[in-house]
Length: 271
Image (cartoon, rainbow, N blue to C red; front, side, top):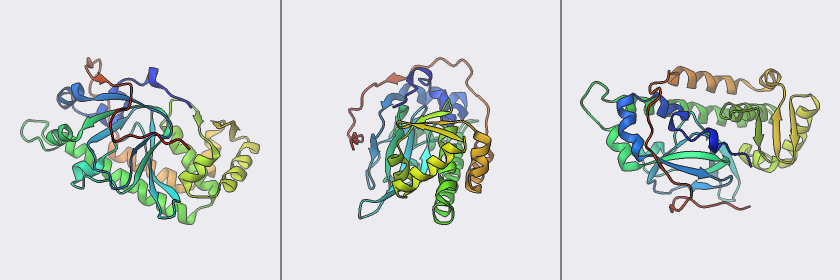
C-alpha cells in the first residue's frame, strides 16, 4: 500500500481548494479536517445520507455502481482534481453509488453545513465563486461518467486498462501505483483473467512492470497510444473547465488534523 501523507498534507494540493479565491479559502480552511484513508476504506454506500464533502489530496477514491448480485464497476474516479459529495450542493444529499478508496493517502473533509453556507453566500466581489467552481467540476465529472459508460461498452479490455492506468497515474506524484489485478478487474467490471492476460501483454511490450500488486509505468507515450480516445476526451474537458493558477501562495494554514477514522460514514473494507 503506497501512501503519500508526508508530501500531501496541504489543502492546496487539492486543485479545487487551490483554485478558490483567498477570501473563501480563509473562511473554510479552519474547518477542514485532514484524514488518513487506508486502501479499501468505504466512505459511503449507495443511499447513504452525506454529512461531509471530501477533498482528496493523495488518496484516490473510486465511485462504483453495485448490482443486486454484488457485481460492481467503476463509473468515475476522484483524486486531487476533485471533490466527493456533489449531491450535497446539487440538492440530493444521498449518493447513488459506493465510494471506495482505491489508493491510500490523505483527504480533507468539510461538514455539509459549512459547505452549503459558502455555496449559497451572496454579496461581495467574490460572491458565487465557489458555486461556479463546483458546478464546473460537476460538469466535468458527468463527462467522465458518460465517457466511462461508453468505454466499458465499446472498447477492448486493453484500451480500458490503458485508460484507467493513465487516469490513475495523473493523480499520483510518481509513475508507480499499488494495485492488484483483482482490484483493477473490479474497477473495470471484467474478469480477472482478462486483466492478467492484458497486463502480461503490456509488460512484455515494455509499457509497464507488474510485481506483487505494484505497477510501474515504463513507457507513458506508448500507453497513451494504446488507450482509447476516452482518456483524452475526459482530460481535455477537465482542463477546459478547471484550468487555474495558484491563488493562495504562502497562505498560512490552520486546519484541524484528524489522523483516525471515527466517523460513522466510514468503514474499513477487508476482503
